[in-house]
Length: 182
Image 1 (tube, rainbow, N blue to C red):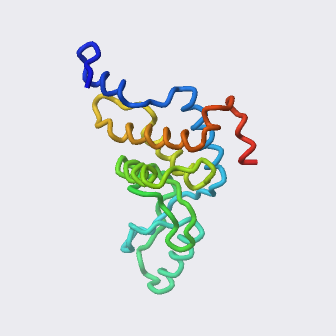
Image 2 (cartoon, rainbow, N blue to C red):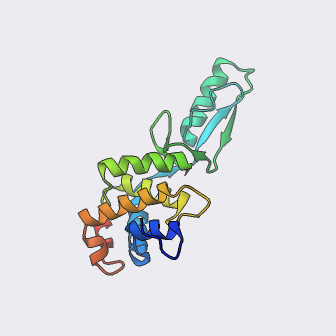
């Protein structure tokens, strides 16, 4: 590793191929437009003696709550949630499998990036765009010096591989690719 001005972090950054800011903006726009095709619902769960690790959309949560109260009329069950919480993976409704909105933890970002590093990220897949938009929303592009930068290295590597497979991302002017989603 070459030292740049005596700063090993700067030398490491120089060796890694970073996505330039204009290309980051193009990638973000692609992810946002692709993710718009995913119907995301608020995440709910049932509190009061029921397994709170199960997540539901509002319709399924209300049905499940009604079932529980019908079986146990005096039960102290109640509906909770409806706001964004952190999750170690993408949340889905236990009943209908709808996407549920949550913010990725660092663990979730790392797991998703490991998957995309192995399988590739398809900018024409609404699912991939939705996941990558969540990753960027949770961790951003730049790595702070106080954290392990390996997640940010992985993000740039996944996006660089995507650019190499889908050359039009960096070869077109901003906004010219948006027709793909219409």
